[in-house]
Amino acid sequence: MGEFLVQMEGIDKRFPGVHALNQCHFELRPGEVHALVGENGAGKSTLMKILAGIYQADAGTIRVRGQEVTIHTAKQALGQGISIIHQELNLMKHLSAAQNIFIGRESRNQAAGKQKKGFRLLVDDGEINRKTEALFKRINLRLDPRVKVAELTVAQQQMIEIAKALSFNLDVLIMDEPTSALSDAEIEELFKVILDLKGQGKGIVYISHRMDELHRICDQVTVMRDGRYIATSPMRSIRTEQIIAHMVGREIYESRHSHGDTSKNPVVLEVRGLKRGRAVQDVSFALHRGEILGFAGLMGAGRTETMRLIFGADPLEGGDILVHGKKVAIHQPRDAVQLGIGYLSEDRKRYGLALGMSVKVNTVMASLAQFIKPLGVIDEAASTAVTVEYIDRLNTKTPSVDQQVKHLSGGNQQKVVIGKWLVRDSAILIFDEPTRGIDVGAKGEIYKLLNELAGQGKAIIMISSELPEILRMSHRIVVMCEGRVTATLDAPESSQEKIMYYATLRNKG
Image 1 (spheres, helix red, strand yellow):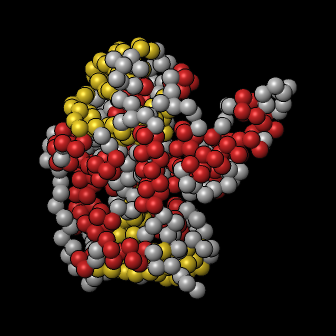
Image 2 (image 1 turned 90 degrees about the vertical axis):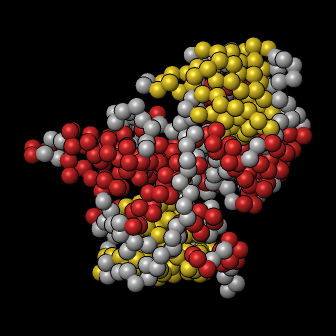
Image 3 (image 1 turned 135 degrees about the vertical axis):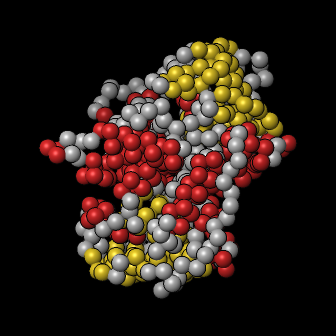
């Protein structure tokens, strides 16, 4: 027993309508980076949330350093030296970076021996700023500890979550999709931190769908499928294909895009000289019917900001938008939707879903007028039928159309958002990081769907930070750097090296 930091045996967990974990097993040794993989909904995040005290198991035992323990709260988990970095960020945007890291621990860190003072005085004390600055140096993050989280990028917020976890005297660190919002340079810094912790004898649980990352830094891999433990293997002795076979138990859609010529098709969307501050500077491009137009660039290149302008989520400072050859005024998302534009945001929980509402409501909400009968009554039969249709078409895993979306896995939530815009039958679809945080099986399904939609004549813009995905799926590729378009490339003649050249082509003026 003493050789293990953590042992989980016979772990069982049920949610309403879902048997999330069925007799699951997991072990972690000191100085080990252990990959935990499986499709969305396989139960890996649920299993780790039980270890971190966020959920309680219905059955099973947990041992930490050989001793059986009861973990009912996150505080109890921290007392056992266990910390988790969630896939979905959990920061308070109105507080500073330092305040977020040391929230709830200010009096111990700053005011020992002093009479208790007001909360604001504690969180503003210079001591937590100094402690935070030391943590940032440890992970090579150049950031003012006093900066408000609301002012930071998603990647910077992710690094604050990591710093917060490291601020505890932990033995076990659980990382749930930690690199999904990080640039390549930030990923390299994260890997240095992980290897440093490994060298100190810490145990790291690493949940990720990125197979290349797992082979780089992980010692062991445990595979889960449909809430069950499948297998554990040394990473050095198992191939990616074997891991995927364990994960999905089925054939994955892998055919590459045909890259047919769509240049003679009608232009359905054209933008000329779009401007908004430094984020979007004189951006112009055209999108053809039946085309998948990929947008590549490093974080902060202005891709998402450009799409938010087109969709009316942010106000334009200059430039023109033309839909089917006609200049249009888009002041709010409603205007864009009425013009046949659908937008799948990279932040699905914030902008794409009503988490407390059902799969059915989320699926029909962008097309509600189609389901209103006389006297304003919703046609429940019709809305149920169309929801079932898209659940089947997208292979969405949900116990029923009435399941609250917040109880679905990230990948299945993404499918609900996609279904919403397919029901709306938008002619122009903007997909911002459509496969971020999604397992290989669901990625294959989304690739197949995008190709089918393009074949039906839909015009698609796809932002992706994964260059192989951009090359595989796009007819043409628009590359951006620092708010500008630096190149428009034909995908068949492109390469990762060529894209990266233009993605780093900074404006020397």
